Image 1 (tube, helix red, strand yellow):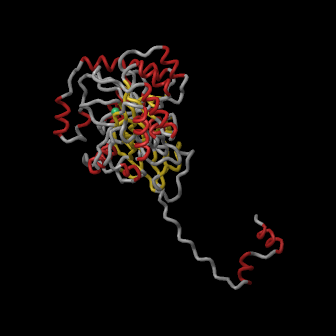
Image 2 (cartoon, helix red, strand yellow):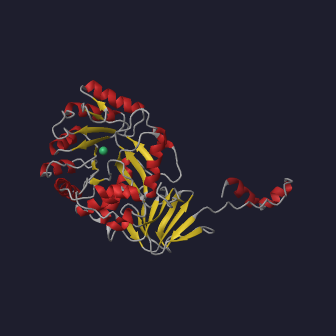
Image 3 (cartoon, helix red, strand yellow):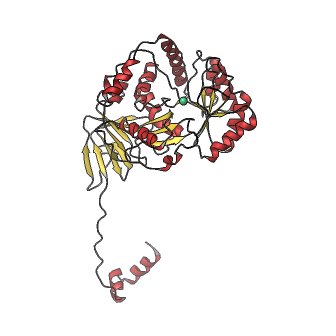
Length: 419
Ligand SMILES: [Zn+2]
């Protein structure tokens, strides 16, 4: 009770009486009830919270694009007047976050990329280092209905690689720092470096130069993500203070020294990017989504490729070791394949991670690493970005492909035809 009320009650004068005395006896106008905008999704198994813990017969309450409550029926109360959506028999996961892509660099094509990701339940994508001048980076600040969100590392940095995509090709420390400054000026979300001799074809970005890049980025509060191939480079990058590996080690099996170095740096994360397994894949699950010609084109290259199998096996063993060692595993697909996340999830499970670990990587971890701080989990306060599945992916990761509906910011994505 505040002071005035206390005085009033001491004097035994009701507020209405006081108002009457003051000549304002009009009865208060009935307040128009605010329209109820909440929607309750009920009956599904919700893979909720940081660990994607299954909540059977769950209630997911969404209001104005945000999740406002998540829990078991009985533990969460549905707001009076809320709309109800019956999801009995379904499983709900947070929408996927793809932390390593290379998206289109003109506006129309980029918007299409983002729409296609939404179609496949991907709520956000980080484009990692191929977004040069003219790329519509302002799309990062736009909220586009039915589209994934977008972040960009701008244009990445490496040593000269004539014949490859021109990025920042640097040969001196001054050039390396200037390249970082150029990306800071463009408000890049991350800094990207490539450290790879491309099968001996090029001189790699030297430690002195990537140390300058990482230092310059850190001074501006930006993290640096490294494309790597070889174990020795991965170790040297750790010594140089790298934040994110945008690939796993691919030239050999990692050793105890590397695992110890990773354990000593708990903030360093790995986006595995497993690459193709080199075996014939069943593409049938895409037949309802992709146009027939696009699917036929995919089938043309769908064959056994033993060299890829060998490369995959190295990465798979390395991923399993680092996951077991407790390294934070992120998630990314490289390139520009909107459905790529479902292939990557399968590849990571075959490597030995559990479906739960892989789903956490692809949602919570990937959101945190990529800077999409209000996405990646089903939790109160998060953006209502979720995928309704016909079966539970914790039982079989292939069930993640059985998409019934996709919701972004609380709105169902139109999935009648592939964009
Ligand atoms: Zn890449």
